[in-house]
Image (cartoon, rainbow, N blue to C red; front, side, top):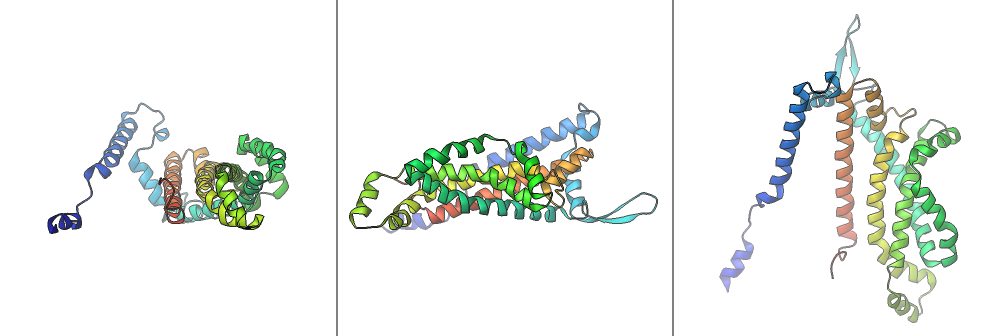
Length: 281
């Protein structure tokens, strides 16, 4: 009986199949990207920056560097900020929009799921807002709130609000009636029913809605930073594109994508901690 026990205690190295496919894919993508850039198929050449040029733009955006123009002068990063500072400002705006969305959308979704007439009144407007592209109301927000951060946070809030509200509503709808009847039979009040049954049972769907909302917020951040968006990585990506600094624009896009992946991993980890029963029979 000791031999099987020892076999379970053996620490095995991770299987290559876990990390080999992503590494191979990355190598193939970089090789194809470099080949297209070096082939000269795309003209002018700055329209197809190579991976090395993008890396150089990334390093340049995070360091102090000299620029010409008669007398050399030292410039700090891009547009006076390092790239990571642009990223932090955008993250602060996204965090503000997401926080407001959670504060408003979760109670609203719970109310729609537990009060029938309220869903019939409010539900169509949530669906209407979900179908609108952010650029459709960006001009109104700038007119109402000005070109500062308030309009940007408001736009990100409107982008993140519908998926969280609808996910909360779907979570409430998925609660079994016998669970509600059981807690009611024990004399629980409406508030106790919501806090002890409805909210915990809906939490997995709320976190799923939050994951979707984070994705929407990242796709909206460039639109949010079109007007007076500096510092901000979305604004820097847009401005560098208009100035034909495509290597820098691609670097910004890659940073945005990688940051979004990291945030998604954080939410997934949080989901495993808060709702470990999800996905288990």
